[in-house]
Amino acid sequence: MPKLKTHRGAAKRFKVTGTGRLKKSNANKSHILTKKTTKRKRNLRHASMVDVTNEKQMKKLLPYL
Image (cartoon, rainbow, N blue to C red; front, top):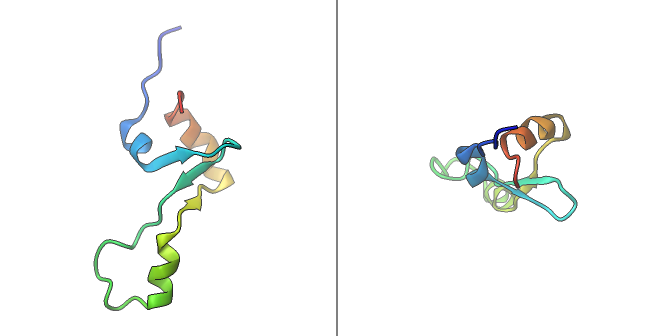
C-alpha cells in the first residue's frame, strides 16, 4: 500500500484535539469588520469544532494527523 499524501491546505486549517476531534478557526474575521457587531467579532475569536457530519471527510484529507 503506498503512502498517502496529506492535503496541505487542510493541514494548515485544522488541528486534532486530544479526543480526536478536529478544531478549526472561524471565518468572517479578516475584513469588512465595521458592519459587524463587537459581540459577533468577539465570538469569532474562539476556535470551534468541525461538525460531526464533515469529520469523516476531513480525516480522510489528514491521514497522519
